[in-house]
Length: 277
Length: 237
Image (cartoon, rainbow over all chains, first blue to last red; front, side):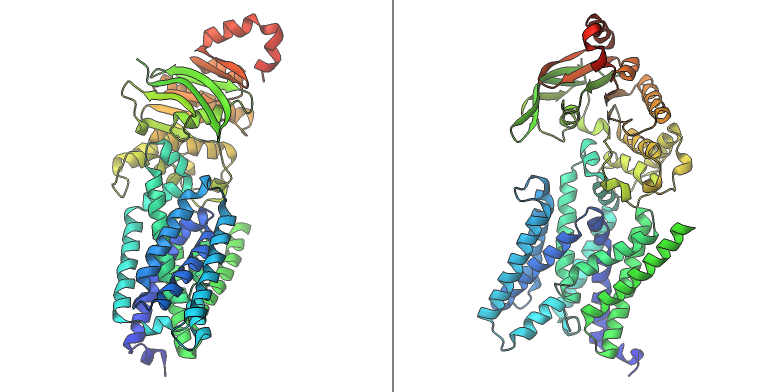
């Protein structure tokens, strides 16, 4: 079957729409995340989301996003805003929480599992596998709704996001409530992480968030261009990844991430070229 | 009537007092220079004045119509900013952040303001350049232009000449003095006492484990003149 024939199927169309929107959100929020040196937090959050998914699976929730999203948002807000004052600092706190959540999640899945095939369940939630192709109608609407919300928030607060990323202290000194914007950014990061789990699984989520931003930063040198370029890279990679995985039967998440790795390599090379000139 | 009252504040982190019993006031139009050695708590004081750091004791009050949104701040350079993909223009424009409230984008007036402050500092030509690729002096000018956009009444500078070569440092002092003559209140931290005395109308000298001095520039000169034989070395650093 050709790609064109696959595109006639509604599940393929749904996967592409959701994939593109989620990838777009991930790329947008990835730029401030990387620039604030929070890449590792994105990774930690996805492990927390895995814990949430395990709980949802055990209590047999119909749509696990209803549990995962608030949990991840709460974790993001507390990790990103407690920051400087916490007793256990930065990377240690994140490592601690993320492995704890991972262990907790696997423990739950293994002990209280309702399905006979545990390892397939775990593999699906860690690496995404085919979940993007088996989306339910309610899932699709929720994903689209949240993605549109994230994009709208990003557009409306674009200048604030720039200011709070570049220099939150300056913003506060100028009398702007920078804390509120930091919480907003953290909440959006939480939403995006829980959405991207659908697309690439929890272990690969942070790739979706950081690769486009890092690729764009190799070549472009102002904020707006980096944001636009990483959005474009992310959407293109998601489209290619999903189509490749459908046609050749490769795992969706891993294919998207590998596409992004290749693009990152290309951008690195062309970035070097720009520099040499 | 003063714009900024600071009364008997103590500063420190987690119970560790860095400086105590600091009192001074800044009237609108003044040029206050905060001097003192390393570890005297100058930067911490500035952060307290800006509301970024909570003093352990004492009060900081704003008067004479001065509000939190009237401050423009030139922070000490940090590492994070050095590899940030931002054009000089984007950085300067972000100084208007306290003018636009919840409005999503900067309006024409704010863009003109940003342009104007870049013109004042002679960096219009750099507007499209990447911030991280500018020289130290140019970066400092970009950040000063940003602070100017935010400073409706008062400009607060933390070690603006640190890491600059002598010519760039002199330029920075001249620009600041010009701005002050134009009516802007200036509070500057510096450890260059000699130059500070040339420009400032008031001096706050902070010393570790000693009461600090606050007074007009002339007063400070007269006082330090008296004890010249003993303190010459310390004062000319």
